[in-house]
Structures are given as C-alpha cells and as structure tokens.
Length: 460
Image 1 (cartoon, helix red, strand yellow):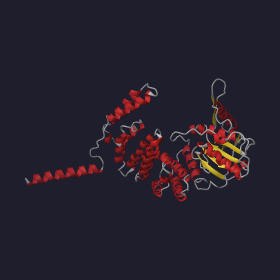
Image 2 (image 1 turned 45 degrees about the vertical axis):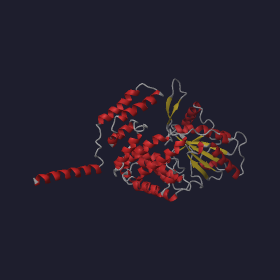
Image 3 (image 1 turned 90 degrees about the vertical axis):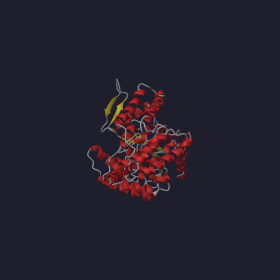
Image 4 (image 1 turned 180 degrees about the horizontal axis):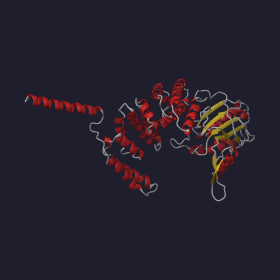
C-alpha cells in the first residue's frame, strides 16, 4: 500500500515538474493549430475577394480577414504561423489586433532570436495604424510605436535575429525614423543598438544603421558621441561581412562610403562643401565641379528617375528654380548614370537604349522622360559618379543640400522640399547675408510643397 502511494506521489510530482517546465517554456495551453488551418484561413480570404476591385475589394477583405482570424486560436499560434499570416497581410485587422499583439508579446518573452523577431513583429503591427491615423490619434499611435520600438531594440536576442536576416527583424531598422528624437537620442537606446552590432551581421543590417546615423545626426543638438559610437561599431561589423557577389561588394563599398563620409563624421554642416565632380551637366554656364558654383547659392537636389519620392519632389524644385532664375541661385538636380535609358520617341514603340559610356545620350533620354511627364523642366541636371554620395549623407533620395556663395554647407535634409516657403526664407537669408540681390519676379515661397511620401517610400 505504502509503495503504491509513493508511486502515485512520484507520478504527481513528475506531472507537476513537466507542467512547470512547459509553463516556463511558454507552451502550456499553447498547442498551435495545424498549419493546414492557417493555410485554409488565408485561402478563404483570397477566395472571397477574388475578382473584386477597389473600393469593394478593401471592404470585403477586411470582413474576410476578421472572419478567418476569428476562427483561428490566435493565442495558440506559433511564431512561424504568425509570420505566414503577416506575409498574407492578416495581422493588422482592428478586431483581431489586440489578440495578435498579446500573442506576440508572450512570444517576445523568449530571450533568443525568435523572441526578438516577435518583438519586431509587434512594431510592424503598430505601424499599420500610423498611416491612416486621424490627426488627433497620430500622437497616440506614434507613442505606441515608440514603446514597441524601444522594447524591440532592447531585446537580448536582437543580434541573433539580425544574423538570420529575418525580414521582420530587419524591418525595424526602417522604422527608426518614426521614433521620437528624444527617445532615439537616449544613450540607453544607443547602448542597445551597439550591443546588437556583432561581427557576422549582414550588409542589410548595416544599411539600416546608416539610416539610424542619418536620423541621429539630424537631432538638435547633435548627439555626436552616440553617433560616433554607432559609426565605429558599424565599421567593425562591416569588416566581418563576407561578400560573395559583385552586387554585395558594391553594397559594401556604398555602406563604407556612408559610414566614412563627412556627414556621418559630423564634418558637413557649417564646413566647406566636399569635392563633387560632374561628368556632364545641363547647367549654363556648364559646371564641372561643385567648386564652379562658388559665388552663388547652390541648391543641390540628389534624385534618380526610378524613385517615386524623387519624382514627387521635382515640382517643388522646379518652382524654386523658376522663382530664383534672376537671382544668383543655382538649383541643380544631381543624379548618376545608370547605363541605359528608354527612348520614348523611337519609331514604332519605346526602346531601351544602352548608354554605357555615353552619359550625354542618357541625359538626353532622361530629359525626354521628364518632359513627357511635365516634371522638372526648369531644373538642370548633372551626372555625378554616384548619387548616393557618402560625404553629403545621401543615404536616400531625394536629398537636398544648400551651399552658400562661400562654399559652406548650410543645410542638408530629405525633408527640405516639404516646406518650400521655409527653404526659400533660408535661401533669401543667405542672399541678404552676402548682400546679393533677391528674386524680383515670382516669390519662391509660393512654391508647391513636395508631395508627402508613404511610409518607407524614400528611394534608396
């Protein structure tokens, strides 16, 4: 009898220990549904909206997602299943979002790379609220975004997640720009980033860190010590990156040029403009380098034809160029040769033309494209070796740089064309300072603002 009781007690203890272990691992009560159930949910949404067009498509899809997700045990979904649903765009629907966020928070409790990925996915879900948020809700959404970003960047498994190049973990780097400046400038946040930067990371992480350095550098006052810490840590990681193709080698060189450029080092603003050579230009009189623009206010707009954000910025740049045509101000659209362009006036139908070694022909075809779209007709172009210029901190386009007649860089930022009136006042203040004539015709301050870019639509 006594032996039987001891046996029973041992079994109960074994069960309790097993349950405790399962609870500690986060698996007690969280038996994931079959993957087939998840695939069926995705299929049901696809079937319901097949053949529909906006706006009915959007309305029916929301209903379909809400119904399909409501039939899944969200609290039991595995990380892999949540990633699959995220790829299908099914995690952000309002009625299921609280359950999704709760599940991701539970998974983020794991201290490894998987936990960091879950924390990063929470940021992406919150971001879905940022774009359509009403003005009065915008601050609340940004606060939630800030909190989710802080948690993701502080996660001990972030370095491991980055090493796997997981898309969700990588994506948080693009959300850095939406953090509050005060949060990003917090030394603790920089400490977390520096800790996550370990040898063996891939080039995509470093590309994201260039964006972080860009954002940190734009904070006033500039947290120079923190920027320098991240810059040096990034360079150490860059040395460990093994490139296996020509494209990867090109990316590595581009990242190095950004990390070692004047802007990242804090040696651009208020300093002489770095050397910049032009291979061919439409400017009259022709300019071969940035030095040729001394004696005038220079407004450089770095852009490229493949970028939607670049195209949206051209009307504002053109209005400024028109307004300052009689003043000692040069507005110059700076880009680089791509090696091919489309001839839209070719007999029969548009033809792709190889322009390798013929930058003048490529410029002609680029101008043909812009004229056809009625964009940037008043902004002369100039080709330089690489539009993503590290010295000027051109890590995305469009990027605007203002240089005074003495050749000193006065301003740099991707947002300068968003407020042409403020930019015009800045230019006119420089003209007054150098006792130069201001425009006499149209007031540049009336120039149209560049059209805002959707999230992540800056061109890289």
